[in-house]
Amino acid sequence: MAAIGLRARRTTLIPNAEPNVIPFIDVLLVLLIIFMVTAPKPTTDLRVDLPRPGPVAHVDIPPTIVELRALPGGGVSYFVGGEEIRRDQLAQQALARMLAADRSLTADAALADGRIFVRADLDVAYQSVVNVVDTLQHAQFAKVAIVAQNADAQP
Image (cartoon, rainbow, N blue to C red):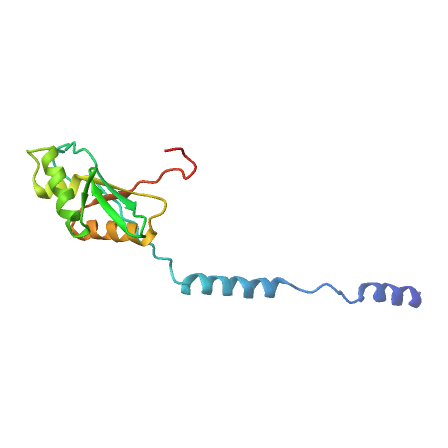
C-alpha cells in the first residue's frame, strides 16, 4: 500500500517543463505602451485650399500656357501664349496675357485665380522647368501647374 502512495506522489510531482510566459507578455505590453507614448508623432503638412467665406464670384480666366522649347545649341527658349519672350519677362507677360483676356479683371484676381500651365519639350532640362515654376510662384501666381504628355505620343 505504501508503494501505491509513493507512485501517486511521483506522478503528481513530475516537474512541468513549460515556461511561464505571462510575465514576459506583461513586460512586452509595458514596453509597447512606453514606446507608443514616447514615439514622435509624424508631422506632415498638407496644403488645403478651402473656399473663401462670403459670396463666390466665379472668375473664368482662360489658362495661360508657358512653353519651354529646347534650342539646338542646348539653350532654352520661352514662350507665353505662343509669343517668344525673355526669361526675365516671364511673370509680366503672363500677367499681361491674363489681364488682356478679361478687361474687368484686376491684377490681384488674376494672380489668385489665373491658371498657368507650364509645358516643356522632352529635351529641356528639368531644372529649367523648376526654375520657371519657381519664378512664377515668386511673382505671386497661386495656380501654377506642369502639363505632362505621354512620351510615346505622336506629335
